[in-house]
Image (cartoon, rainbow, N blue to C red; front, side, top):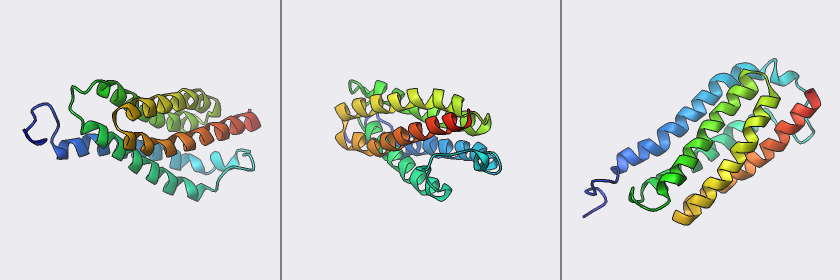
Length: 166
């Protein structure tokens, strides 16, 4: 039986949609609350010297979201009854939800503290997702390491912004 004919596995198009559409939604929902808060609120915050220029965030997040979608697509390509697949995907979508929530907490509520309280468990869930993906597909796990590195950096940045403005 081919991949396309397997009754439990999503079609290649459904798999792509399940991998890509939530990631696009996460990007759009984050932008919805972030852009209106950049000026004057975020611009007026004290920031550490290692704060990147605003223009870097768009390209970095575009690349990270593309890698997240690729990672999810690879895991979705495994048969649904693959041991660990469901847990891995649950962790993936949980970290994606926390990613969206961070923007709403930090930018929407104008609260570096709320963002910090979100981003710390978010980073742990990303690392757990990488661990679960690694057990299923090494390439999918590798796709998430840049996300983990960026969110680790963002955690330190968020902490410093909270400290400097608290």
